[in-house]
Image (tube, rainbow, N blue to C red):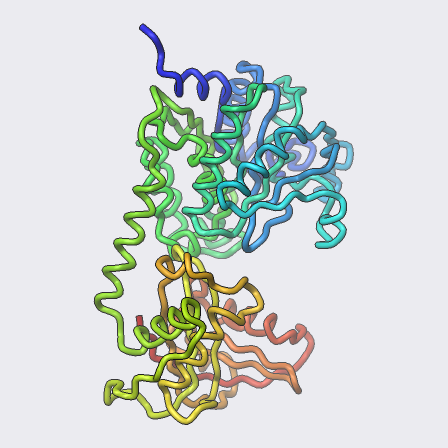
Length: 477
């Protein structure tokens, strides 16, 4: 019987793929006796590395959650040689040096550009421009340590995840699949990332019960081969879990797009309050229909449904930005707002795309004559003037969801005992330095976290005295 052409290409070119964690402590040269507490992880890393090397790949693509991570693009290393050591983890003798497969890198970048996926080639010029580290990060070196021990000696390609929406990361993976199938070498792909960093009270990022929930959900979804469940993990769950492995995993899964999965968790443990998971994930059978259009349709349907019930302020913000982006004009404000709203107030307008922040601009006090005008001004600013993001374009409008925060006058408080991050926003000030943080934000669960973020935004150092104010907010969706 003749095999399906898609299966021949992918199964022959993509020889192995897996998820690996990257805690430096699993290297005996770093962890010493503490490495013994990670026995399951060491065994799992060894097993996955041996299975990968048995497939004799020419090149390994490693997707890391560290390195040059950008808000709006996936970074691909484009230097000739990939060099690093574990000196920053007190093990300078552990060194790595690999040739970069620049032909594959350039093909991947060009294919991404043709497909509308934002990538940047991190050559020496850009490395200097962005002042990023030239050496390999531990997200690459920890997996490579075990791969090298298993006998790998080929070339590398290093990809740093972007802070893009999950659907865009999955789309990157589909282009990675395309590049692999048209390239001459045998390729293996490793997604490098840890699960929740908040599993126990002594965890480095503090404790959050959502950490265990997140890890259990990912574990089950991988075992069941449920790609959609992984790509559509609620953003707030991932945020509260404090993980760094979801995005690399989604990029890896995109590389399997259209295939059933043969997936298995080889090991999982959380000995230091951080989840370490090793999973083998391979395409199985013949290539079928792409999942990407289904994922996009489901998202657009959920956005459409949410707009059926949106508050008048949210509708005003959305229609204002849509008209400005589409026609370059400002619509007439709707003055017929619900009676329970104030006539004037400070307002923040937040935009999200696929669950991730796309822009947020606001005012702590009213700057216009009416609340409607405040909303409209800040809606345009959130979409077009937030310095953290590029301007919103017309083809993004269908993917964006909105929220509007109406701020009530702030009041001075004596100390942080009067704060509640779910109920009150906070303003910190020292001289001309001021930082504000809204209440009830994803991943901000304690007063300490709220204050630390506000102080960083203000540029107030740990030794500086500062004044505290709090304010109440009504949030509308």
